[in-house]
Amino acid sequence: MLIVMDKKATGDEVQRVVEIIEANGFTARPIAGGDRVSIGVLNNQGPVDSSLFVGLPGVKDAIAVTRPYKLVSRETKPEDTVIQVGNVLIGNAHMTLIAGPCAIESEAQAMAIAEKVKRAGAHIFRGGAYKPRTSPYTFQGLGLEGLKIMAKVRETYGMPIITEVMDSETFEAVEQYADIIQIGTRNMQNFSLLKRAGQSRQPVMLKRGLSATLDEWLMAAEYIMAGGNHNVILCERGVRTFVKHSRNTLDLSVVPVVRKESHLPIIIDPSHAAGKRDQVIPLSRAAIAVGAHGLMVEVHHEPDKALSDGAQSLYPEQFSTLCRHVDQMHALLQTD
Ligand code: PEP
Ligand code: MN
Image (cartoon, rainbow, N blue to C red; front, side, top):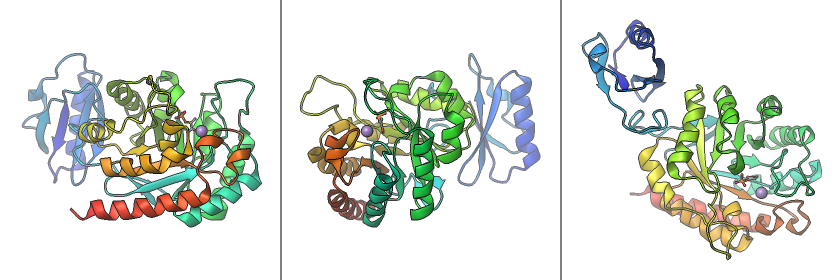
């Protein structure tokens, strides 16, 4: 259930509703909206009696939330969530471009790529310090050293940074450095990691699992929000299908459904979906057309020498082209 407060409701009136929710053994989760506060009722096993709230001072309405993902749902928060990271906004009408290498390989590599993607128009720098690799014999990332290099990139180029957290052991370190914490495909249903992310103050980008349904993905996001962290960004990066012409299949059909079901921003990662760089620009254009709030793209200045995912990494010049296309398409879509 969602208790919608009046625009003029006072802090005391909100507090009284919270107390009634808690006195009934449920959890109250106030949600700041555009011009009013709503209070989500969580942890109820069955329907909640609306007469507990209707008629109380400051209460406008008590609405049953039908979706299993309560806080993620548009029923709970009708307006789009916009997440601010430094000077960058993610969500609603903003178009956010995240770019950088798959993995941080050295300071020189990270700096060279950061300089180029920044100049092309990237807003946020990506790079993996802890890498989830299929083979234990391949490059596993620089770990803490990689995080420190990313912090230097932020200092030098003024771009916020996003990097993946793989486990609870390294969560604190990643949290200390990252402006956005990425939870990767392979960890989408790592529930202890999701709970830990729920306690974080940093925004979290949750990538869709390789074979996750929409409901499973949104429920994973619900874990983070239920823990108290409302700054969640969804990222579609391709799902596993029978095809061989690409690494995965980018499920763009999920974008309008996510936007209907949820207020959270959704970013598209065409790089891990395609696996090949020649598909990345066309898929990016399609992602913008279908309503994505931004892109996360792998870029490398020397992809042939990349220690991971070179084949899908754009050359910096290709990323510049992509940025121009995105600008033009976004401007076109803003006009209606
Ligand atoms: C990544 O973005 O670096 C990554 C490993 O992606 P995914 O979790 O989508 O495979
Ligand atoms: Mn990669």
